[in-house]
Length: 237
Image (cartoon, rainbow, N blue to C red; front, side):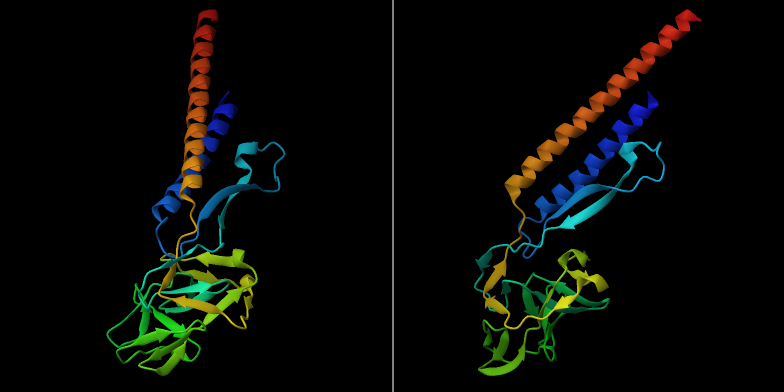
């Protein structure tokens, strides 16, 4: 009977792990550029023919890189990539990539993320010293009519190889394979919304909760059967 209990426990734990990802998606439904995550379990090659099936799956996190919709903000420093591509960000840990174009200026007049990391241009950091800042659809940054830089936007052939690093940033592994963008387009005064579908996530959450409750009932039933079997065995002896 313990074999079946272990199977139910393992399945329940997996549902709890999936629940964490769903709640995280919902918590970021209004985060610009956020990409929804989904936890699945992929069966691995059996090393032991007697291994219990419930324990023969590896967790894999899938990131949905589909674009969100563009929402007007009116802030000229808010920028959204239209189509494919990622903004290049310079962090203390190296180059990172994001679809969150909610930018600002630091005390040195450099274009940075809300976390203070530098937004990279094709020629390096972009400094904006002036009053009127404009960003064209081609990503050219101008201050008081004079060009000061151009946003660096890159893409990747294998987006599944991008690794989430928090704060809407991705790190590119060697397998990601950077792809050149000939004419990337952006929209100034707009932000890309999260691609989380709240209704879909709520339905998924309800389904996970029901499955978890079902596994709990199975464990309770098995425990009760064990108790009854033990009691009967005691009477026979």
